[in-house]
Length: 160
Image 1 (spheres, rainbow, N blue to C red):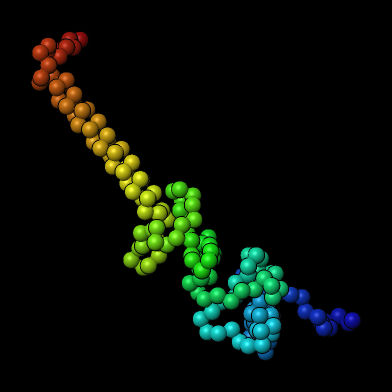
Image 2 (tube, rainbow, N blue to C red; image 1 turned 60 degrees about the vertical axis):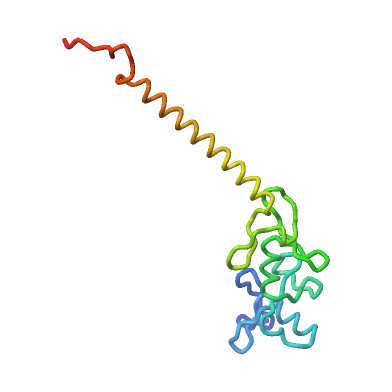
C-alpha cells in the first residue's frame, strides 16, 4: 500500500457514535446497521436505542427502535414492566407506577411518589412549627430579660 492510498478508512467517532461519510453526508453507523438488517428506513419520529448503553456496540441484537418519549424515559432510569412504565422514587427507593406520582404541568411525574411527598411535607411542617415556637420563646425571653422589665437596675460602669 502506497503512502496516501487509504482503501480502508479508520472508523470515526462523533458524540460517542461511530459515523461514516457517504457523498459528504454524515451517516450514523447504528442507524445504517438497523436499516440494512430490517430492509427499511427508520420511521419519522422514532429513535434507535443502544440496549446495553454502549454507543459503539452496533450489533443488531443491541439496537432497539423506540419513540422519543420512551427513549427519554429509558435514559432517565424508568423501567417498562408488563407494558407499564415504572419510575424510581428517590424517597422510598422503589419503582412505582405513574399513578403513584403527582404530575407536573408538563405531564412528567415528580421525583417523589405521593406517599413520600406527604411524609416529607408533614416532617417539614413539624420542623417549621418547632422552629417558629422556638423563635417565639426566644423573643419572649429577650423582651422579659431586658432592662425595661428587669426589677434590678442594670449595672453601671464608672468612667475612669
